[in-house]
Length: 88
Image 1 (cartoon, rainbow, N blue to C red):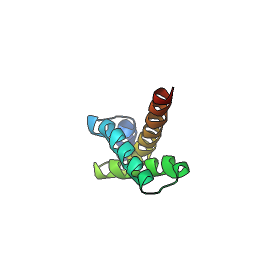
Image 2 (image 1 turned 90 degrees about the vertical axis):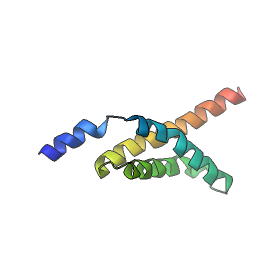
Image 3 (image 1 turned 120 degrees about the vertical axis):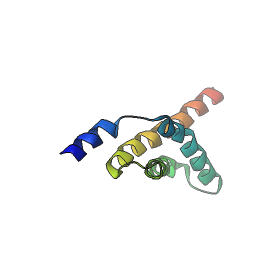
């Protein structure tokens, strides 16, 4: 029971390290796109990279999946939002 409470407490607690992962994931996805990844797979790859990076940061797998999805979606939105601003 304690483990489940601890997971729920840390599920949506974002450390500065986790927040810093968003631009790293964005950069990794852009590198993958530059070597030939079709753009339609970029959001899926950003979620996979997000989960992987959170796991490398030492999170429990349940937390890594939740935060990795949030990081992946945030990095996808960051790219598309900034692209629309630049293109007008």
